Amino acid sequence: MNVQLFRTSSAPILAMALAGCAANSYEETFCDTLECTFESETDAWEASADAAEDGEIGFGEEFRGAVRPGPSANRLTARPLGSTPAKQGYYEYLPPSYTQWGEYPLLVFLHGLGENGNGSAEQLPRVLQHGPPKLIRANQWPGSRPFVVLSPQKSGGGCPTADEVDAFIDFALEHYNVDPERVYLTGLSCGAYGVWNYLGKYKAERVRAAVPIAGNGIGAYDSAGCELGKVPIWAFHGDADKTVSVSGTTTPVDKLTKCKPRPAVGATIYPKVGHDSWTRTYDGSAGHDIYTWLLEHD
Image (cartoon, rainbow, N blue to C red; front, side, top):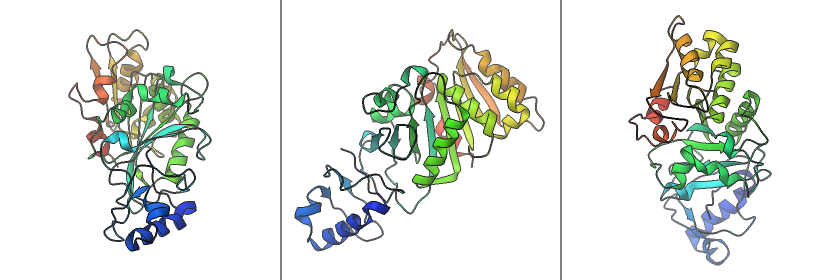
């Protein structure tokens, strides 16, 4: 069980745990379930949890401190609909260095149409099929990547709307220790439609850079024109995609590159690649480091 320490509702418990672990006075009631590795108040939250009784530690208004060390899957947590104030169920990944004192870059990942679901504990695991959540679950996500990664599940049919994405970003900024100047957006297929939809409406209001993969940004450009280019965009597509035409990427990118001044927008088109142009992009096997590129924009 992956347990994080939160602020607000759990603050008395955490204070008790800190005092108890230091003085060995709560070994039976709390520290038996929490591996206490506190060496000072400054790094008091360098703790990992193997188990916790239901209700002892729960979702608070803001996260308190340190997370479980080790492989990335240890820090991947399902947040079903109703377990948090979010309007969607989602998966949460917190980097090993995550504490209450820092502000971390936020990466929001939007999945494809086949992973839509109602956000319940039963349907939420569909989100793990592709993209960053898949890599995190497989322990193929380096701890050196500083992102908080949140992956909301789209309910019902269709692709994420601009307003749905904006509401989720609102939630993340309110409830996580993330830097509002380092908010990044990526998505594949229908999720890439969601990325383009968001940028077409909200432009650079929140997001500092975006990576849409195998989506269609023609409507976004038609809506926003050259204003769309205020957000750095690195788009990806396969030229043999029979599900979403490659023109969904090449058309808006070509138009944006003609804007003055020329925006930081480009596309990578994989030759002889079909709809799945995302696996090689997210895992880096095609030689493109989208994560470093994202962090260059703040």
